[in-house]
Length: 522
Image (cartoon, rainbow, N blue to C red):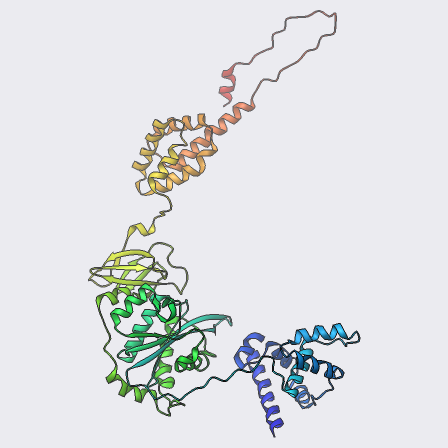
């Protein structure tokens, strides 16, 4: 009967593999979806239904190629139980020249079968850890926190890594989850705490954590040193922190189970379309399933137990210091602005990277500060009390990679005559005030192509015109450069006359052309 059920399960898996393949998933994605190795997926896809059923019905009890080495391997493992399958394979090759050529996996399976048959464990058995069923905690006393990661599918069948924060109330089993597409920092973890307390409509007295680098600097033999930001937050929020010992996840088994629950009940098979949509779906899932269905351990519904626990939770602390420490996340629009209280506030040009660009916003007094996700200040604005306004900082559209005064000095060094250079730069500023930087950048790029005498001649001409921009200046310089090149091409060709020895020498004067002739040509 068991063999029949096993065959039916394999047939079901074959149909599932075919279905997912027609939906465009590759071998690895199908394997992650249904828990098969990608090589097994590839094997299933190569077979049609009839061939697959015939394959699974074949007897798999084939004679072992290494059976005649059974006694040798048994003795080896009996005296040295810690030897690995790779070491066993090497010993067999060393002792037996006629060893058949087999895959290393075959040697591994053969070794494991001998261990199982003779009861030989690789490592000495340790005394099992003794557990005791604990009493249920008091209402409102404890919560547990943990983080998780999961690779979600996207609309283009690629994978997107998602990070999530989970908090669960120990007594009622009421759960909360917050998800985002960027790794958590101490600041974003604090934001997640506040969102969890808001969801629970109160905060517990004690919270149990792993020794996460977001929260602690050093375990310090039990006297845990918190990070500065998290320590400040805990002191103001008023709850007590409890940190598990290293490598002891069983100390907070409730939240460990919730992390798995989020991965395999909520995230698995879901398509990622953005952080906002994902968190909205998560809240609906919490109400509908995670907190709405009977808990398999307590056999009680978390939502109903939470209604009782709410009365025992502490009120949420809302001090100014906490509000300032916890910025709000805002999405950056394509035009490098954010929308805040019905107004638009500009950001430095280039802040927008893609459709998933976010910033943090803090409201301090009558101003707002806008920070990037690394908490670096981007800009600040005076809060506008009207609606539909665009509060603009005109500095945001300018290239600040180089100060204007520094640029002026660099361009001035390119002029052989400093005084005339200053006059031309003042003329440029007067005629093109809003484009001074653009004109200076143009001169910096093209002036080095000209010799000093050409530049001096160009400056004289520009001062005579008394109205120009940088492009006209470079065009004038190019004209003088071409004129000079043409003059250098027109030269007298020297004539050399060799007289034979003994011949009469004559004083010869070559003919000369008048320069006015060339001037008329030009």
